Amino acid sequence: MMKGFTVRTSKEFINKIDNLTLLDKWKNGFVKNELITKKCKKAYNISNLKINEDLIDKTRWTVDEIIDRQVNFSDEAPNNWRI
Image (cartoon, helix red, strand yellow):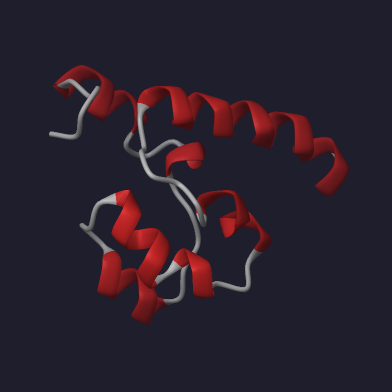
């Protein structure tokens, strides 16, 4: 279990949009179960997708980081999609 995560928080956050990102099939398969630092070095830093820009320099991935990303997505949503 990752630091700061309990079984309850893992189940609560595992499939939320702010805990997920887009990668092509090859990159995703390559880093699927790696820690965030390895994902950053092996996949996010070579992704051309804007959604991954905020992940490039991450050194930890906690509930607080997920919530912060959720807030950022909420703030940016009206600028990117009609709601």
